[in-house]
Image (tube, rainbow, N blue to C red; front, side, top):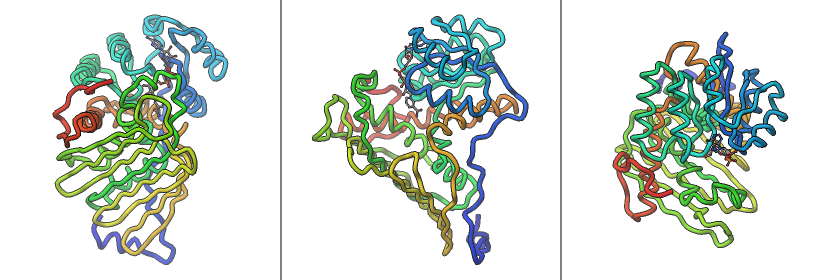
Amino acid sequence: MSNEDAASASSEKWRAPPVGYEPQDPARYDPAIGLIGCGGITVEHLTAYRAAGYRVVALCDVNWEAARKRQQEFYPDAKIYEDPQDVLERDDVEVVDIATHPDVRPELVAAALSAGKHVLSQKPFVLDLDVGRQLADLAERQGVALAVNQNGRWAPHFSYVRRLVAEGWLGKILAVHTGVHWDHSWVAGTEFEKVKHLILFDFAIHWFDMLTCLMGDEVPRGVYATTSRSPQQKIAPHLLAQAQVEYDEAQASLVFDGSVTNGGHDSTFVAGTLGTFRSLGADLNQQTATVTIGENSASPQLKGRWFPDGFHGTMGELLCAIEQGREPSHNARNNLRSLELCFAAVASAESGQPVVPGTVSRMPTT
Ligand SMILES: NC(=O)c1ccc[n+]([C@@H]2O[C@H](COP(=O)([O-])OP(=O)(O)OC[C@H]3O[C@@H](n4cnc5c(N)ncnc54)[C@H](O)[C@@H]3O)[C@@H](O)[C@H]2O)c1
C-alpha cells in the first residue's frame, strides 16, 4: 500500500479496510475429530466446534469424569476414553486436538503423528525448541499437519490487525504496544499455580506470538523483561510482568498487570509508516478497534470474541489447510519463532539482563 493508494482510499465517509479476519471453515472436508485432555479450557474448544458444526467423535482424559462431563455438555454421541492410544487406534479419527499441559503433551503429539493423525496442539507448544523441531520433522515425514492452538491470532481485534498488516495497509511496522490489566488470581488451586513464569510463559505466549506475526520477517535484536509480585497476590508466580523488545527499526512493549482486581483494561496499539491501529476495552473479549490511515479514521464493527471464536479460528485454519493440501499458518515450525522470543524474555527476567531471542532453546525454568 503506497501513500497515494492510502490517500485515494479517502472518501466522504471513510470505511476501515474490509480485511477478512473471521474464522474460515473448509468447503467440504468434515473429518472425525478426537479430543485428548478434557480440562478447563476445552469448554472453549467444544463450544466453538459445536457452533461450527465440527464432528467430535472421541473424548479422552485420564480422568474419566472429565471426559464424561464434556460428553454430556457438548457431544452426547462421542465415545469416552481414558487411554489416548485407544483414540489413536480408531481409523475413522483423522484429526486429534491435544489439550493437556505442555509437560506431558510432546509424547502424545508424537504418538498421534506416528499414528498418521493431523494434530492441533494446545499452547505453549513445547518447553524445548529441539523437541518442537523434532515434532515438526515427524509431521513432515508422516505427511500430516501439526498446528499450534494460538487462538489469540483469531481474537477479532488481533485477527483484524494481523490481516491489516499482512495486506500492507499500515506500511512498515515501527511500534507495537500492548497492555493487559486484569485479575489472574483465578489460577489458585489449579496446575497453573505451579508454573513459575505463569505470566511471561503460559499467558504471554499469545502476545509474543502476535508480535511475531505483526513483525513478519523482522528479527528481534533483544528482549528485556522483568516480573514482580503484586502487594495483593496470594499465589507463588509473580502476577506482574513486562517485556520490551528491540528491532533494528521498531520497538515493542508488552505489559501484563495480572493483579488488577478493579477496573480491568486491555489495549493494543500498532503503528506503521502509513497508519495506526488501536483497540481498547475492559477485557480481551470486549474491544473497540480504530484504524487511522492518513487523515482518515474509522472503527470497524468486528464480530465475535476471543473466547470462543479464537478456537474456531485455529481448528478452522487447520481443517482448511488439510483440505487445500497446504501448511496451516499456525504450523509448529512457525510457532518456534514465538517461543524463541518468549524463552528469551523468561531468561531475561531470570538474569536481569537483555537477551537475544534464539539464544535460549529451553524454557529456563518451569
Ligand atoms: N487461550 C488458550 O488457548 C488457553 C487458555 C487456558 C489454557 N490453555 C492451555 O491449555 C492446556 C490445558 O489447560 P487446562 O486449563 O485445560 O488445564 P486442566 O488442568 O484443567 O486440564 C488438563 C487435563 O488434561 C488431562 N490429562 C493429563 N494428562 C493426560 C493424558 N496423558 N491423556 C489424557 N488427558 C490427560 C487432565 O486429567 C486434565 O483433565 C495448557 O497448556 C494451557 O496453557 C490455553
